[in-house]
Image 1 (tube, helix red, strand yellow):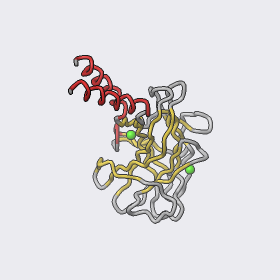
Image 2 (tube, protein in one colour):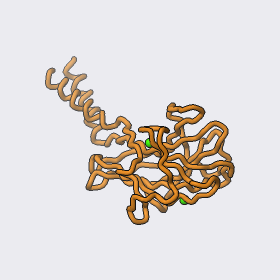
Image 3 (tube, rainbow, N blue to C red):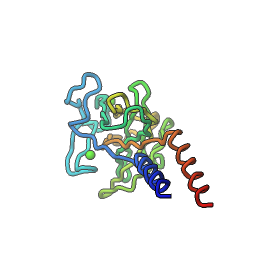
Image 4 (tube, rainbow, N blue to C red):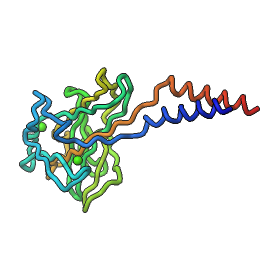
Length: 203
Ligand SMILES: [Ca+2]
Ligand SMILES: [Ca+2]
């Protein structure tokens, strides 16, 4: 019986990798997509806002989409492991901030508050519950990615406006990304076998 309990505890430990991890965008993990430069053209790093007290804002001029394509490199992941990836960004009451994000620069998704945006090509965002003043954080689901041989996943970010989205103040406030390990089928099978084993021992 003791072995069974230890086995189940070990499985519970494996299940812990499914918990979500937030990775704040910073100068140490976010670069210009084109050449890896640390100069994020027309993105301004503002302080005293959002997670870790930092937010990347684009554009620098209201109404344009001059912010360059950038990328955040998530490190420290399990090589070969699948992860659900979301982008964390902000909106303010009565405004229409948006962001685009993708696992490939050729496959970008568009995000804004689904409840207020008039865009026609939005992917789903959900409020995370984090607020500051009249601003609130949203998480937009980008997709599933497999961590590469170095345990990394690259997330591309831009300030491109969704189709039909309001033109008034559609700045982007990009905060970071969230990764959540997707339980592997083999793990689920082992959990099932563990449960069966425990059930038989109890009889
Ligand atoms: Ca931040
Ligand atoms: Ca842009």
